Image (cartoon, rainbow, N blue to C red; front, side, top):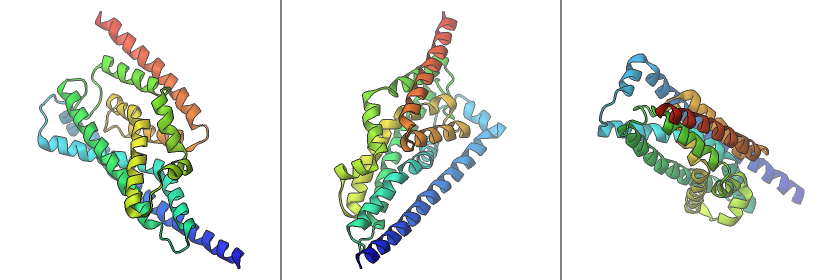
Length: 265
């Protein structure tokens, strides 16, 4: 009888994982489709020329940029949170077969999305400020080699920092995070999602700053960063690859910065 109950619980857990994973992938797919659409629009010659023009931003420009960053952040970051969401659902269901894991898991995704939205607001304002300072185009691509070199160098150095290590550890260890931050129910899920989202931002903010080098509307640049962050968080060799990438960014940034400074002399 005990064996039958265990088997039934395993079947239920597998169903929960399928439903939640399908939902996460669906949301991510929609976000990526919209990101690709925006990138395609920006690639048209007329639109690209308009974005490159040095002009003052309107409230509409800032709102559209905020929307762009929000969709892009969800597309990039939700897949990296999938292991945490699935582990949360498994633990919730494991407490009791009658416990519905959808509420806490949905709450977690909502809390996580709120953090990504807040970061998007900061990023949109940063893009506005950088454009006003003539360091980037309106589309977020660097126009200053000194600025680009400094961002590359800073992002590379951050890969070796204690803050990066601490935040990445929490992102890479779903079970440890849930054991130390567990709160029941949908409200508890929202609080856990917010906490985990903060760790994700703490881990990835410097990599996100690289968007102001390659362009916040550059699809290949965006996809490359998204894949790298997923690999860094999910694969066993992710931390090692992160350090290798950090060293590469330091060398790249130092080269760009040094060349720019020599040219300015």
